[in-house]
Image 1: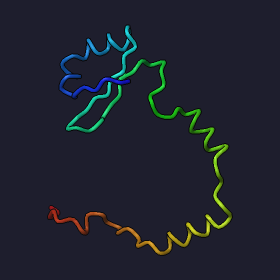
Image 2: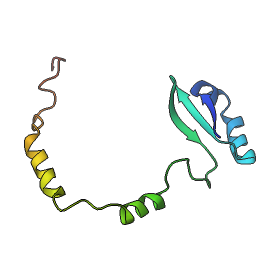
Image 3: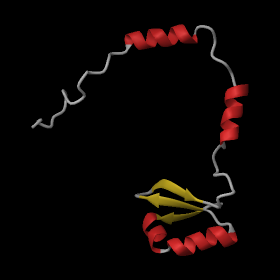
Length: 96
């Protein structure tokens, strides 16, 4: 189980945290403003999420789109409004 620390604590104790990761194989989750922003774990240990091997295996063995998928996507793209040519046209900030 990863230990939760604030970004301030991580900044102040970075050397200690790296020592704990390297020597005691501890894991840390760094929070900023109450949100998880980073994980610090031993480099040879995969993060608690999926590995690339897992992702590739899912893509290979997972469900395939049905035959109507491509036509459904074309229909969806036709019904969506297009983006403006100049994204700043609708900006409330005056242009100089």
